Image (cartoon, rainbow, N blue to C red):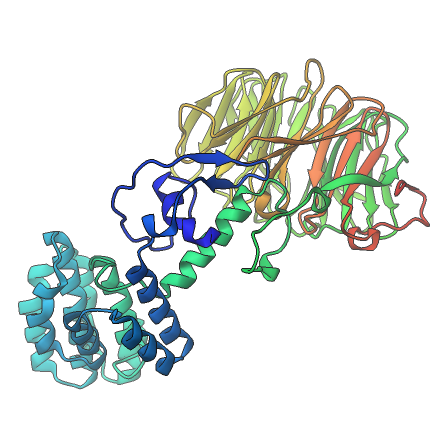
Length: 565
């Protein structure tokens, strides 16, 4: 019965995938909704018939049976219920499109009851375009010219598209036409694809959206997963026979390994992109590259003279970038050798990050006024006046640099447009972390964690997360888990804090460290593992209880301490 609630969910503006077609629904009367502990909504004293009428459900079932190939069953249901899938005029229109009966289609257009002149114009253009291409395919050039001149030109508001269509007349062979038009011909799927496009302009009550029942089921499942605060599993095992509920065992919350080779505070950690190695930087002046299969150090990088405050893996994991004092170093992750040293900064480096091409990087310092864009050889591409660079990162497309600056400003440098935009934070910025899609920036401040949309640049944060403690130290945060559904942060009270990203719920406070937790990082290839680094000189690996230690790359026969107990 949960799936029958999809209409009322949409009425309440709850999240549903925006790319899926939705039928407009009439206003519903108010109902009492009770929020339950597991995150679901219970509708009290409401009968299904009040928001799902039987004829609508029968039409969805008939369509689903057709989609599954059960034609006889679909006909039997239609006869027994006396509910047609669609009206006779719509059925004739659909068959005319699939048969290419363009003359009949023109007379059937009034039956579609399209109110918007703009929608009607778009629909006619799509029909005319298909007819034009089929005439070219059949070598009927005179009729094609007439169609282009009399049918398409008056309807089009895009001269570029008309020019593209007219240029197709120069195609001498059918294969050339199909290739240039990105079209598979009248005998292919083009008419079926056309019918799918036409559905966008016809009321869904007349011409049902494709696979509508399956779409509703999928939306219901995704909604349940969204409302589940512990959802952190693959979608391969979707069960329609029961409501979706995850327990906390799918969340990494148990320490399974302690790495203790550092001799002083561990300031920063980062997984390699393949998830097989972990890099750590410490006040003890070393950076360590760990093998997560053996839990042993692969390399202990001792070239630094002061603490390692920042580090970053190159996109192919072949080079590790480190910042220590005023210097930025590049280490070969296979040999452990330092291959480059850059000394552009006059004060301690606070941030370093790679561009996705692996040939450029950005660095900055909190105590000086410049943000540097360099190539891998050390050549300066550009510098920006950017006082007090706290943290900086590059979007996955390489087009933007997002920088925390001047205590409370998030600066966004658009490299294509050569512009700088600004988001104003309400409190001191401590660190930044960019989402995998490059659209959202997570900001750790003194009091809260905030997420901001760096494209829309709204005046208020998307979400706020409260609970962690921060007064003196640099505390780092990150996205993580399935679809990056969780927010993770260190804290000065020795704890690791975890929130649900969308609902802002604090769902875990994890103890184990004996001093401030400076850095956290979620394994990009293993949704059931993350790491934390602390002033207690250790790094802890956390895993989900439901999954074995082998799934989380844990090996007890190592130099690290196994903490399964």
